[in-house]
Image 1 (cartoon, rainbow, N blue to C red):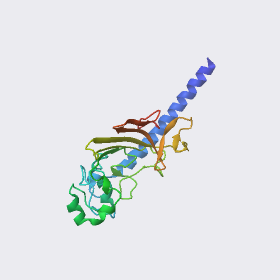
Image 2: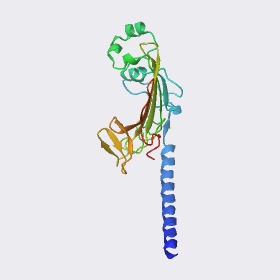
Image 3: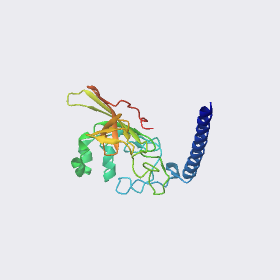
Image 4: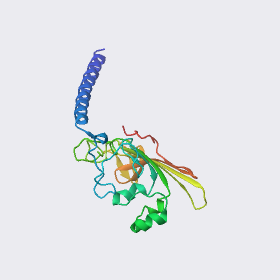
Length: 228
C-alpha cells in the first residue's frame, strides 16, 4: 500500500509538473502568435527572384496554384518551380509560352508541365504566418531544421501517359526525429521500428501508391503524425 501511495504521489507530481510546463509552453506560443505577421496583413512578399517578387502574398490560390493560407497547392507540376526562378505561370500553350520564355524549356521541371499535382502540408512544413520576424512564411518554426519538427507533406500527381491512360502517384512524407537512425536508406526509430525510406536528408517516405501498380511502399505506421 505504501508503495502504491508513493507511486500515486510521484505520478501526481509528475502530472502537475507537466501541466505547468505545458502552460508555460502554451503561454510562449500565445505570445509568439500575438507577434506573428499573417498573410492577411499584406506585408509578406514573394521571395526575391520569384516572378511575383515584391508582390504581397494573398489568401486563396495564386496563378501558380499555391494557396499558402490553406497550406496546399493545386496545378501544373512545372509551375511549382517555374515561378521561383522568375518565369510566369504556364497555362497550357507550349508555343506561346516558349516564344516568350525560351529558357523555360531547359528547366528540369518543363517536361512535367502537363502533370497536375495537389500538395498539402502542415504548419511545420510551411506556415501561413511569419512568427520569427524574417519577413517570410515560417518553416519548422521553433526548430533549427526540419528534424523533430513534426513536419509532413503529401503529393498527389496525376497525368496522362503516352498511351492516353491516366496515371496517379501519391506519397506521404514526414520529418524524422533527432534520435532516429538511417540504415541503408531507411529510417528507424530508437526501438528499431521502420519509419520509412529516406528522402531529402531530413525526411522519410512513409507511403507510396501508384496507379496502375498499386501500393509500392507502406511503412509499419504510415500515418502523418506517427512520430508524435
